[in-house]
Image (tube, rainbow, N blue to C red; front, side):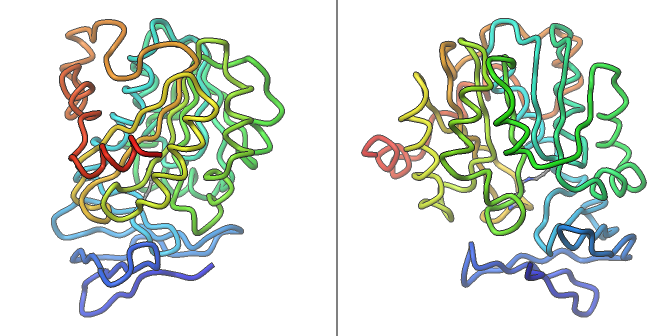
Length: 288
Ligand code: SPD
């Protein structure tokens, strides 16, 4: 797989065919880790102003500066939309950030976690402990392997499934296809909810439409929630959601003060607001 970044004069520069004609740069102070795993190039940098940064095949997966926006929303929007999630599956996100957020829900009793690249977990445990602390909870069972194959084996087992994939240009591309979504639906309990990394409404309209069409066809309710995040392309990313029962656009239960105090981005207000899309995006998704 192609590596999508360059380092020049102390600057990391990300470009990618998925967002042609534009690039994003962060000033770096030190390369902390740089090695190819069986699946991808893994790099961790100390940036000048954005904490540590994890890149896979040269694409920024997270910075310590704004990772909370993505991890909190991808985890808490589906989990709070569900009235009482007990069994949860997380696919991808070997950094542990999504697990860290899922574990804030006391009602959750069992968390299956499936990641294809064990090295991402190892590297995160070494360099990104504020995310990898997500692995410390005894409710988590870690499975190393292909997320799609894992899902296809499971039937009516999960209340919520969260897919924290990279972009559809590397090992994650299978996670953007219909057979995988059919598997997700079959792995959910009858009132389950699925939430997947849904790319940008500005930069990846083809992908957003493709995922919206698939979820509209397979699920009873479907939605797209938008997240502001400065270090992802275009400064935003979305969540594609499908529900077999619960309403997606508002929390189904209160967020306790103890949990809310620990969160930096998610709140019941931003849960609802994140589904209100700019007019062009609303039209784009209404007309599919
Ligand atoms: N364009 C990058 C999208 C990355 C989404 N996954 C990030 C993993 C963080 N847990």
